[in-house]
Structures are given as structure tokens and as C-alpha cells.
Image 1: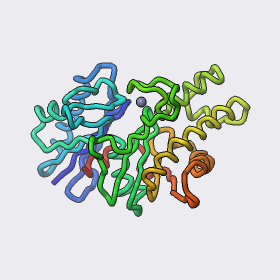
Image 2 (image 1 turned 30 degrees about the horizontal axis):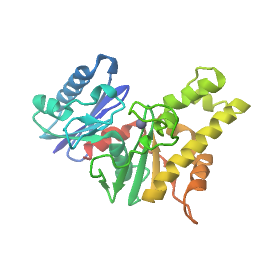
Image 3 (image 1 turned 180 degrees about the horizontal axis):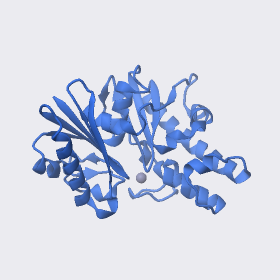
Length: 289
Ligand SMILES: [Zn+2]
């Protein structure tokens, strides 16, 4: 059976076709055009899948990685930071146009599955995969299988409350981890402290003045508390970081120390690793579903 994996991201939709031996036959990227709304996104996915299917040499199995999850109660998308998807019957709408078997899974779960199967966490049994990008998510893989949880929210540390009266979040709560550790949140905080609009990569390239130190120390504190809370519950064999924020190198030394400092244990040696698959983890994870 050939496999098609689709990764629905905030800025791009990527599709990949694998042959029976998991070789890449084709991969394509198109912009997400979130501003055009749900129908535009669904039509883009359908045309991408149809394009890839013309190259398939056998029946295909389709996996879709998406922000959010399918609600067990309603069958509709919930918890998505691509907010135009919330409340939409994505599975049903794709089925109407595509006859093949379609599996839909949360993007952080797909990321964790891909890294656990073929990336940085290949030799570990209990894997916590973290996405810190446009939003903050997480996925748990136990012995090669995604742990979805009773209501499909397992791993969603991005909406743990970090500060009770903190930043307001699209989810309706205040102080969620995502409102401190996502790329946009970190850039927003930089602007509050310095008055400057700068991208995350340019901020971390010049981190030596006192305002930058304030920004960095808050960031490390929030990262440390947020991830230590997860480690206290799951005690994973490894944590793998993904998303744009994971490119910041100080997360793997000073960030790791900030996490270890908060974990409830006399021995803390959980590896905190950078992903190996880059932004391809989503499509590969979708193929592995
Ligand atoms: Zn939230």
C-alpha cells in the first residue's frame, strides 16, 4: 500500500507520497491561506491528495496531521490554534471527496510519532514530543504508539496554566503555557520589554544587553516550570523539541538546567533533544498513522 501524508500547518500545507517501501515518490507544499477560511483549507488538502494520488502505484492510505483533535463527543475539530478549523467536520468533508481510508491526528502527536520512529527519539520507549512554534503542543508516544488519552488531549501541555492571572489565551483561559512559550508570544514579550518588533532569530542573535537578559531569564523560567510539570507527571525517557522555537540553542543547556531545577526528583537526567526531522516530522508522522 502507498501512503499519503498531509501536514496542515499554520503557514503551509505539505503533502508527501511514499511507495510500498517508504521511499519518497513526491512531496509538495502549498500556502495555507488561513485568512480565506476553512473551505479554502479543505479544498487545498483535497487537490493536494488528488495530485499525489495520480502518482501512486497502488491503493493509498491517507494520514492528516492537523492542529487540534477530533472531539469524541461531536466528531468535530476542537482545540485548534488554526481557529477556523474549530467546530468543523474535517474528517467527513475529506471523506466526501476522497474514498480512501483517512486517519486524522493531532500535529504534535504526529511530530512525536515521527521523531520516536525515525528521528531523535528512535531508541527511547516513552517519548514526549514538544512543539513550540505558532502554538505550543505536545504528544506522547509509548513503545512506538501514540497515547491519545481518553478524550484525545494527552500531552496538551500548551494549555497548562502557568500563571493564574496571566496572558489571555484563545482557548478562553488565562496564563496558558502557549501564551508565554510560542514564537509569537516570545516576540510579543520582546516588544513589551524593548519596544522593538523583531523576529525570534534576530532576538537570540544579540542577547547581551540587560533588557535581553530580562527577556531570556523570564523565558527560561517559564520553559523550566512548564516542562518540569510534564516530567513530574510522565517521567519520559526523552523529550524532543520541535517547532521554530526549538532552533534556539540555549534551550539545550541553560533551558535544560532550568527544567532540571524544577523537577521533583533526586536524579534528573531526562535528555532534552532537538528534533532530527525538522519541519518534515508532520508529513512523516501522518504517513505512519
Ligand atoms: Zn489556552
